[in-house]
Image: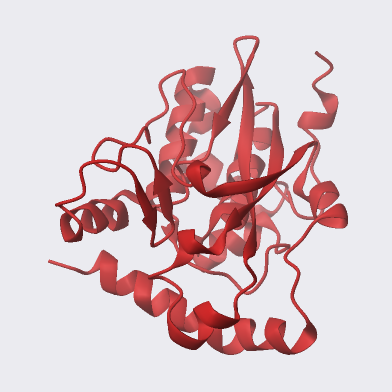
Length: 235
């Protein structure tokens, strides 16, 4: 495999940014064996970058790091940037998911006016001559743990609150040379793989008119983040 295209910095994957380089140095990721690099970076993005909704999908990785939160597309951007900065090839796979997956995070007016198909992506990492599909970094563990507590009677599949899995009690969220999924059961359209999110977003993005996009940016996402925090702070 020619890995050059899967290691490049881009406008969105701005891993040369000083904040990203400082984080990598602080964590000592470059000194680790490759498996430990992937696992440690994965766990960082999953649990230390909280599940939440940023201003847009096309913000650079350094902005996601500064925000300290993100969703599938933006957390994926940061994950890819950190991987590439450590010399680990990766690419992005684009989809849409049914908005039912977001019900509970989206409520009332926001849910009713949301498009049926929500733009989604996961990251594919090349390691030991194999591509691994990694998606379960989207929900931080504290959020997911509390979502399971609130819905403790659920013993099978679950769809809502940013989660869509077959086995809600035992989703595969840890990377140990395996694929991980947390929203894959909500997928309803497959756009295929792209070298980087910049290329994916040139061809596919969330279909929103100016008014709805503005309403999401300044109103809707803040309500959604408030609903996410309620779950995370549940006790």
